[in-house]
Image 1 (tube, rainbow, N blue to C red):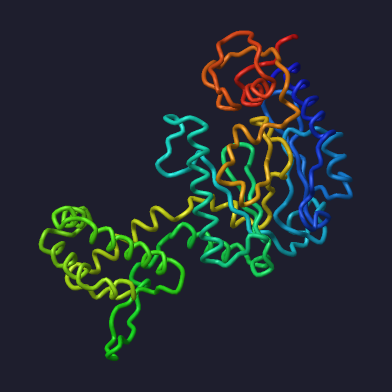
Image 2: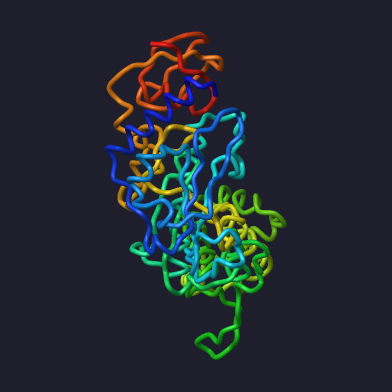
Length: 388
């Protein structure tokens, strides 16, 4: 990034901050604050170990400094400005989850577009929110969802029940969300049936047992709607299920739908294979590939909602739950300040540009583009600012 580009971005970020109102997080005075300024050269310098006493009112600080990136700590401290992490006096911390489009299973950043990666990431976000609400009982009012401004989403959980958890306990939450080393046999317990006989039954009250049970019931319903040949073929797609076992399972599922709905998994030969296959399918589809270090780090700095991501020019956008389905980060996270005029940029990395409504390609050389496209190209290092 050359000097003209750096000064242009710093100036335009400052223009945005002078017209914006950025809300600080709860207990802002107990948190550490950090930022990365626009500095010469390719490197970055993190300025941290600051408190509100150091930076002053947040919106005024942002307008004055126009940082490239701005952060606050998930943790709350006695002395947030202390330069020694061990002497800050840790009190508690938000439970933070990070989903990064670059690290999603089955998504190759080299093979799909930025827009496609972010669309896949939003699907993972919805799965994560379902887990947090349904399995952990977190209320929507205690969760803040934020588009990171770059490659994914953050979820801040501010629930007193988890604020004091140490790193080990938070890792257990991560393991649950990602179904790490899930004990499939532990999803089943022995319960007395109506005759008083103990039978193997899925734990249907909650957690992964409930999720596996719901999928097993739906799977059995789908098989009953098929003709027998198609149902048998479907069953034999499961690992370890041959034709004979498939016929046995199909017969039990077809004759005893109420048993399946009650969680009974004593379905004859192949039953354990069926349940495990369904469980593996559920965990593959419903886990969320969160970034473990973000959740387990008790002193993590996280991007401040309402600020601009210096690597994209997009907003770190807080989102209401009813906005998630329709939210398009590459359109809806564009600062309004960067709309309405064109700028000249000198493109050295031509190709598709994924922001805005048109999302056209840009050619190499000096071109005139909408300012938000120009800011995106400059922030991503694909162009330098040309003289107007």
